[in-house]
Image 1 (cartoon, rainbow, N blue to C red):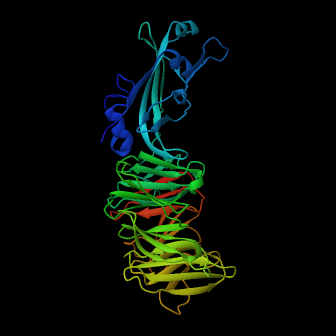
Image 2 (cartoon, rainbow, N blue to C red):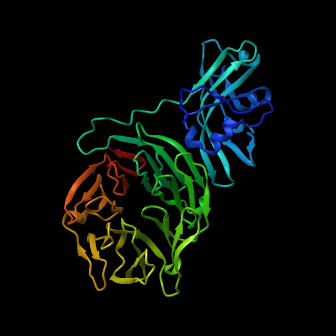
Image 3 (spheres, one colour):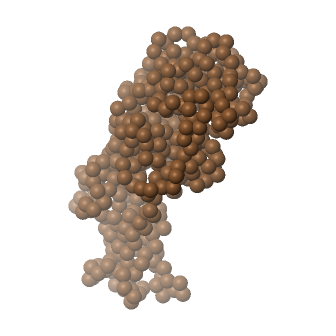
Length: 454
């Protein structure tokens, strides 16, 4: 992988076309996340990109990389994000006359990833810029992206996270961590829906990003494959997008029509619930169907899908006007399942334990309740501590009990519903999405924060 201290590489060749190094970084941004590329604007282009008035009462100078007509790569346009690129004079006596004598702008850029929001584009960001004299080559102004604040500590207060990365989208909907615990993927909806992938092996840093159109419904879920090689993003319109986890390349889109989805352990298949009770299991390797339960007019839409930790059982949550319907199937045998008709519609989240024998459901009034995965079973309160669990719910395959988000933290429970551990958060927000790696790293996203417990 490239690092930030490597020498910047030319962005374009002598013919004005993207260099091979840039093309490689655009196709596999995660493998070149620290590499900088340099580009120089001269003449009319430089004048168009610089707004400056040094003789005004409040002098200012600012540059705009989005005003440049960047080239395309294989028909896919390059775009650079608009940022607040206010410049600092290199010396005190830089005047409008100094600029009138001739200047150029040197840009330093890094690759962000792919953007499918409107038309496909490759997206970059500016990390530094210099305005220099074309007569003397002297640097007149400079701008550099501010250093990130300190976000990690080796000795956090009892129960609080080791790392707290701010600036995360408040529209985050899901989080996943790689089997080795060094990569984290966050799915978001809202105005800029997509997935962001971070390397958290030391101080968390985003290594690549993929954005989707607002009309896609946003990224509702994200997961890693069993071997950690792939990341799958599950969109609100049912489509599944698969990427190379490290590089962000090798994109594959599976045109599904589902409403909600989750991965089937060990991670090579995605279960997608749709309208009228439809359930489809898609293979991530090639986008073909593993198994499908056809929709029926008598069924409600699937609101949640849950899969057991061993990948052998799948359950769905549906609603009618007066009741909640939970259906359960054995995945591997593709045999007929069974269902529970629960009174009322106060249920929100659904999870299964490791071997698929126990269902967990959050309820608006009762908190976390359990339901044995057998015919004619009834819901039971999990325990007094579990009454707090009314929001986001998860069950890690290696954990003794479920976990849920509560105001001020994440509550991890034992199998009988007693508090095993409370991960504390400096926030009153009560909805956090969380994941835990086999090596013990726990991550959570919510309220604009990415939190890490090592």
